[in-house]
Length: 115
Image 1 (cartoon, rainbow, N blue to C red):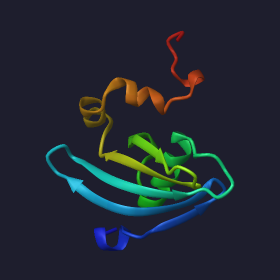
Image 2 (cartoon, helix red, strand yellow; image 1 turned 90 degrees about the horizontal axis):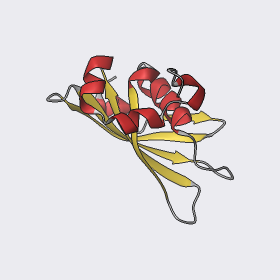
Image 3 (cartoon, helix red, strand yellow; image 1 turned 60 degrees about the vertical axis):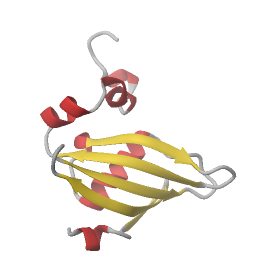
C-alpha cells in the first residue's frame, strides 16, 4: 500500500473508527511511523491491544511488531490520537523501543517468568 493509498484509510470496529492520518517510512531506524485518529463515540479510549489490532488490519502488518508510543484523548470528546511505530522484525523493535513501552502492550498474564 503506497503512502497516498494508506492516508485516509479507515476501519470501523466495535471499539471505534480508526482513521490513518499519516504514515511515513523512517529508513534510518527501519520502521514505519504512523498517526491514527480514533473516533470512539460513547465508549472509553480503546486499549493499546485494540489499537495495535486495528493498525495491523489497516496496514496489513504483524500485530506483534506494532508499538503504541502514545495515546491522547481529546478533552470532552470521544476522539483520540495514537502515535505508532511499526517494525519489520523483532530484533530492530527491541533495539530502538524502551522496555517499559514494550511492556505496556502486554497483558499481565502474558509476561511469563513469574512476574
